[in-house]
Amino acid sequence: MSDEDDLEDFEPDQDDFEKEEDEKETEEGEDYRKEGEEFPEEWLPTPLTEDMMKEGLSLLCKTGSGLAHAYVKLEVKERDLTDIYLLRSYIHLRYVDVSENHLTDLSPLNYLTHLLWLKADGNRLRSAQLNELPYLQIASFAYNQITDTEGISHPRLETLNLKGNRIHMVTGLDPQKLISLHTVELRGNQLESTVGINLPKLKNLYLAQNLLKKVESLEDLSNLTTLHLRDNQIDTLSGFSREMKSLQYLNLRGNMVANLGELAKLRDLPKLRALVLLDNPCTEETNYRQEALVQMPYLERLDKEFYEEEERAEADEIRQSLKEDKEKEQEPEPKRDLEQEQSLI
Image: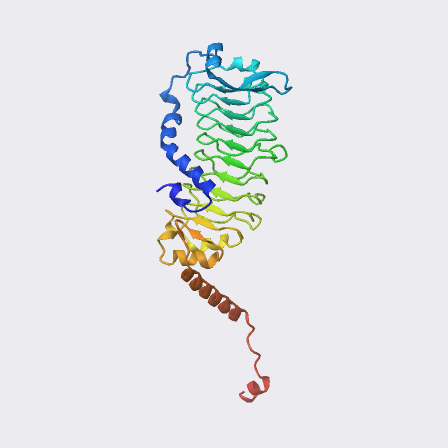
């Protein structure tokens, strides 16, 4: 089963994302996520040349002043590059793809102050740090050897992809600087905690295939609509807060949630409409679907199936019965007649 199945008939944009990602995951994982010992420690120096630039340049546009024209798009994939120093001179570039090379240093990109889009997947990078690029909107550093999230401070950055790296903890993502960031992809890292993802503007967060055991410190993500936590080690649903008032889609597939009672911790998510819990121990319980709907009356879909009206009616009855039982428990005991008690003495 794939995330494409999980997202069927729910939010087409997410469905397209999952379909594309799942189809590429195996191939990319084999191509990019190589262990260091499979490669020589040092590559023969292969600098970017003028001839490569001529082959890779395209998209002729006016420069910022409007008085001249320049090529603004560069694609130099799979060239065994170890050095892109030459890019310092191409200050008008807006779209750059240097993926699938052997780069360890992206500092020449600091001179490209008009850069809008960057793809540097499948290199040998240990950091995604760059100077602040005022117009950068999309940046992808997937399948490198990056160990931290420091030095990312581009004010117009909307989408950040750090999938398939070696990040243990998120640090340095300043919400005062990353004021436009709405999508962060951290799948396939080594995250042990969700602490540090303090980005109130964030809408989509992908944390699948990490080492997470719980969710914590996400209370400020009031605009988050999509949260992927598939294939972690989560066994408790503590950490979800009513402040996460925009969350609509939650994927917890392939975790370790065993107790159905944990579902009660999701009842304060007012907009949660789709929940994926496949491949968790709790899904083996016979009343699994019913219990989920009892706890979350606004839930529209659990795993791959939408709830039917009959299921909703039954859940409403159970919920009402539980409410009545609770009210009875809270009723004070009737006062005894003291005169009758004394006459019995």
